[in-house]
Image (cartoon, rainbow, N blue to C red):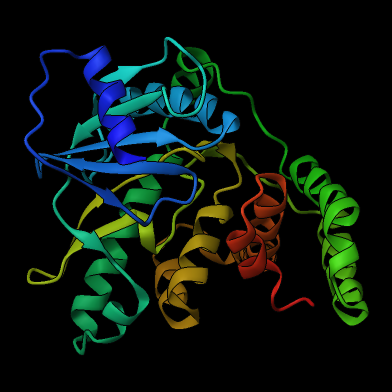
Length: 290
């Protein structure tokens, strides 16, 4: 598949010199190529991902000067034919490797761990504070109601996943969603969010013990800032999450919602797998519910 992607790039940019390339295996929603050891090209695998990539490109252009950590800055783009395999963006490779949980756990210095937490929280504070005029006026992003989004998700889970889930798990899922959807007095102030703020999208330099980049803004939207912290919790566990949430203004107020969102991630992965004929994603997401 990588060679076909190279052909597409050359069709759009015939003078672009490609010396070497390799396929990055991490992307779930995109085929990712590293070209000339200096550029990252992303090709959406699914039709839904095409519109996400187009919106992501617009978001990155608007926020690149507003966040304290490097983010992708698309240089090459192709949105002429809106079909999977032909749409792509390309940007300069950001130094660093994903900050996996086992890498974080190997750090023995509490001071270094807190410094990483502070970098991540500073990033979230900035992205969550970007003005409504910029995200609604310039980008024309719609204000998603978190309860409506979760209601739609619950409806899909009921209709598509419940046949695969054991009875005890069905009861737990139903109770969890009903508690969230019927919650009283939860004033959810929506903001611009990253939308997939987990280990695979957080880059760091192990030698310097610092965050070097945040990537993959395909899930960015106006939503509940608690959703980004759910990504941190899911990736790194309770202790690191607690460290981060204490650094975030009024963090305790969003903690309950963080727990709920985190509980939906595996189900979302299973749903994604079912809807996109991705058996590996489906199996990974559903395995604890069978």
